[in-house]
Length: 299
Ligand SMILES: Cc1cc2nc3c(=O)[nH]c(=O)nc-3n(C[C@H](O)[C@H](O)[C@H](O)COP(=O)(O)O)c2cc1C
Image 1 (cartoon, rainbow, N blue to C red):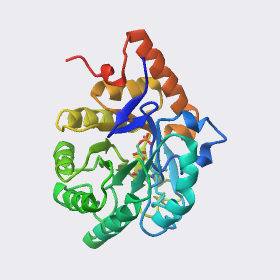
Image 2: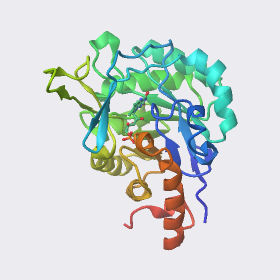
Image 3: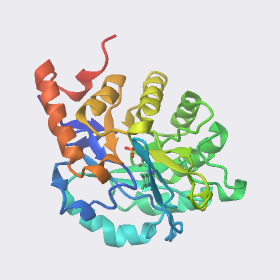
Image 4: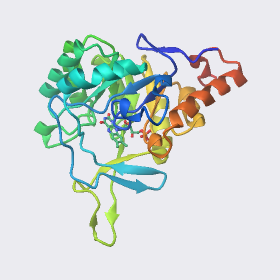
């Protein structure tokens, strides 16, 4: 029995990856858990140029989840390559660089730099506001998403995941479009749009009004989308959204995910990913599964 698996040709110790934006560049968590046991780490969302992010508040607790409005604060792709990537390499888990952008040109330039940087996988975050189109998210309409994915595909030759937004008009059509435009695999879901109002101050909590909802509250939505996408495309799908326990992870693997990502759960329990890995191992032993892919739902 082995938890080892391959994702887009990259060997992972196990199928448990850390979701972008919830684990920094990995080293930040080294004092809280044995980071070397993880299957992979998705970097904080990178952009070509450094970004300061949004003014606070940036986070707000919700029932079984949280809202965030971090605004893609990050040091930029070049800083990442020079100062964060070497440390990440020393940690052991596979390195997945998450890339966003405000224009197609920005995505392309970022991807070009990452192409020769020695990352294992690129995860293209298409849930970013399109500056030239009045801020509408790139991940809502297949035609716009196709433009970004195919432009990046031309300059990035390594394995590429495209991370889908649950706000897509039709998640299955979006998945098919991204696959056709050159994605080697898909990851989903990013956060759902929500908001909160401070009743004493009588104003919205976040300056941008809307913020990203994550955590267990979104899990049934994420699972349904992963289930549908797995059945519609011919490429590996990485499932995420509200995974906090091994049972949650197994649900996504049963739905057909090739691997899972854990995000918001680490804010409450930094050991959650390791508990998930151990729980997966016991589940496989109990059911006599040899390989992660054996977990899939019975036909
Ligand atoms: C504080 C925070 C920051 C995030 N930043 C990013 C990001 O930079 N890029 C990205 O693709 N997703 C980002 N996400 C989305 C997560 O990677 C994930 O898709 C989402 O939170 C759902 O998974 P979860 O419920 O396990 O957190 C962020 C989420 C949170 C909570």
